[in-house]
Length: 268
Length: 308
Image (cartoon, rainbow over all chains, first blue to last red; front, top):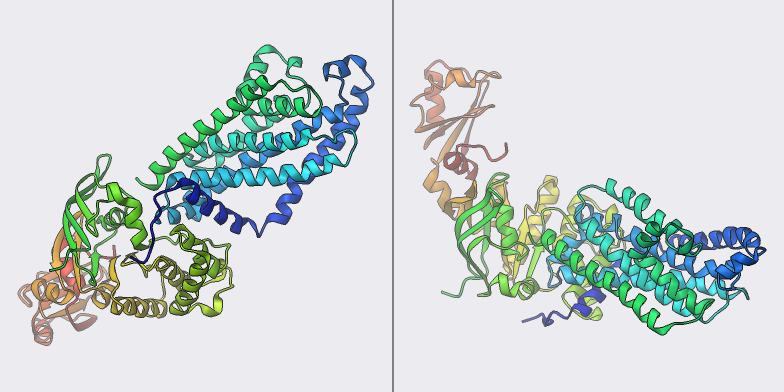
């Protein structure tokens, strides 16, 4: 037999799928990377420096932020929300396109690869995208004394985890979506509210209790809290483990649902 | 007799209440070019998807290379090539990138992917377009690239779902020539089509499908011999009046088929039938005597025209 068959190693297939994403991305990477870098830097300048000059003048605010300057406080939040938006966006239209328009997933489904390889490959690709975009922002942050910290490494790691934790459930949603109108709803009612009320710009304690709980359901806040502990706060290892495990739970559950749904779509 | 490459027995595919494939029996031998002929909705594509191991049979048994798709789907898919009805190419990538990337899904090394891609581009007459973005190719070129891509794993069995639908005559002939070469190299071809000429050109043997069932099986020639007369007289009367001439033509041939645009008179001697038509004082706007084709077989078997 000409073809040596794999024994269905999912890591293997996922790498091939991620390599396919990479080949497609190579044509867009410059504009893409630029926008996922420029946007958080604009927010950081506008909020960190502008709003920060007001916040830092108020000693009770500074206490609330654990003694950190506002720009240092907000930096990990912005880096991680960047990953969240990127991951969610890449798990909507591209997923639908590969199922309905260009039908790339159907092409893959005809080979020895299957649904699990595609979802794992998608997750792997999102992790790489978040790592690159996060690292670019982290390098810029490291240039300024206020935001320079080894904790930025942990922040990028959290950005990767949070990114994948959003990507997989959103992908699961996109796989079963019949039309792309629903994606605007996800952006408006999930991603933007989390961006504003998910703990990136101010402590969640500033919000009503109900909103706090809602924000804590999503993985974003957990990633931001860990990153902030490593950059401007004190590290509680047990809490770090707890938050990380919670984010991982989203990844595992999201991947399982997405794989199940994709298998039904590709192999009816 | 060698073991059949494909063996289907009482194969059924249902989607909810709808039965797409209703208990078909098919065997395809290695090296054969086998066709599923039928109108849209006959169950051809559903059958192909089961054979391609991307759709599970509702009931019945299916074996490819003696393996069960339910348990050996990955392995079977590694040994077949699939040219889907709708291209699944990466339109924003180059022609050769499409081949390189696809080869990796079969776990071929990068070097092997490149080597095979070069050969396949030659075969598909796309060498000069190797660096072109797929989006800029013509329909016929995209189709040839789809075929080249499906051959990257050197499959023993190639499945083609409506390979030339939507192509112009020139592009179809180029494609048929490539498929004919593959057949000569010993690749087993299984294709679906609703084009009679395609089935006659490419298939050693075919089944006619209608409403999920097989209604006839044989070589194109044997089907024509069995189900149609030697010749057919095609008569056209002025628009909308065909029906009113049917009675007047009774007995001219062995059978009449009244279509919206023409009347088909089945007769072993078409010229004699035409003479008889004129004897009866009928003046058709046009008359044509031709050899019978698979379309006539299909009309007889299903009472419907293939292209409707």
